[in-house]
Length: 630
Image (cartoon, rainbow, N blue to C red; front, side, top):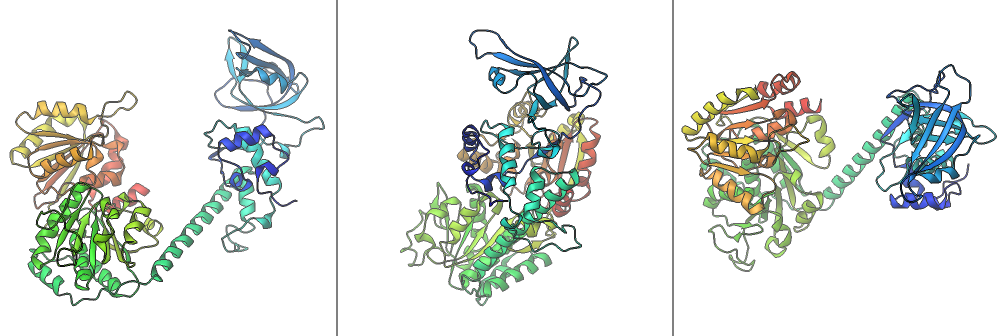
């Protein structure tokens, strides 16, 4: 066995045409071929023994070509069909004639000729008693015979690849086959420790797994190869996570260990006490911030669990230690919500707070934001903003703590860009997306995790019910009653506009209907296609109570707090994942009043009712996320 060449062009078995095809797909090296895994396989091992029979299931046959011809039709000789009459090599009792057809491929007459033996695979159709197979998979047999183990396309478990550049399956399959002929078991790096001799992967290696993932000898071997390569990928991912964690730890940070005077003043001014879960998470954050190594922590809490106030206590610790803090939110309206809370809770402590978004740049008094040399030469203590924070280096000259809200809305590179603005600042990322505990380490392996796993007692109860669409009349009466009590409602739909392909309700049409149903109330409409400024304006009007019922798509999944919103109707709830439904439900129950979430499903949809039953049973987002994963 020779060493595997680096470039595909060094493989003598591939033609220039095949190399050009693979290059269109972006495949030029042997390593790329090896790691271009099939997305499925077809079991083409069995050969029919009773003759040609029509049916919906593909089948394989060993045949000989008895006649070959090209039929042209229309104008031009490029339009036609190449046909090959074939018969079974071994006489069989049924169906001894089959027509193979390749439409608009007359050049096939240079490939297939009378007297050739071949293996074919495809679906046989019966048209008025004539059996045919269009564009079959085929493999010509060499004159000296053909051993089943030498076949690439038929007579074996055959790989099927995802391709987009017009490349034929046979081309990539052929390349994979010939690359594997040069594969030296010792020439493939394996990052996994040697398998235990009596463990699941005894006798396995990366080279064996690569062979089996492309051309397995059995379905069991294929499954084992998938498991081996998946474990290898996961192991490499975890190595990268550990590398990132060590790199951050060794980069040197800022000790934030103030006297906690500001935190004491804030705690004394709050009309509520932190829950035990909030206090536990805050203690973990404070311990990290006081250390010399930079903090890199995820504050993970369900909707309404009180992450923001924990983040503000953390910000006070950084400011009291002489650093600036930055709080980054994914949207301008969320940034403004954080600004309002900061003004209420932090400005009375004598702190200077600025806002920096794409369209607003102001200080805590609503004035145009100063230059860094102004404001007593220090700049703001806390800057709240959106992506615009990434573009102002001078404003964050003393950055010591970065808080990122709804971190899944930001790319890794954006997060790193903001972090680089400080002297390796402490980082606290927050998310309200319920993540199964079994996945937290995988998704956030480079972060220490603090979880707020209880809701503040002053939060109102949320009652959830699953109802058929036929109950709309009763739902309208209940909604009207709530609106008459000066409450507000979200009316959520899966689509923006009606679709012929999807059987689901659309927000734009529903908006018109709700305007008729609620003539005495203000009905608004928001969806993802609206300009960002218009969406922000609509959400402000809803937050300020100028819109009573807001018809929307899932664009409100991450939104502002509207404590007065106590009703949510989710239409076609069967089209949403459980975790997403829980996120949407989190828009209500933000105040002290009891709230109501109704999940409307198609009438008599027992499967949906059974799947959504857990939404009625619990408001624990982590439990719901585990059920979604299951």
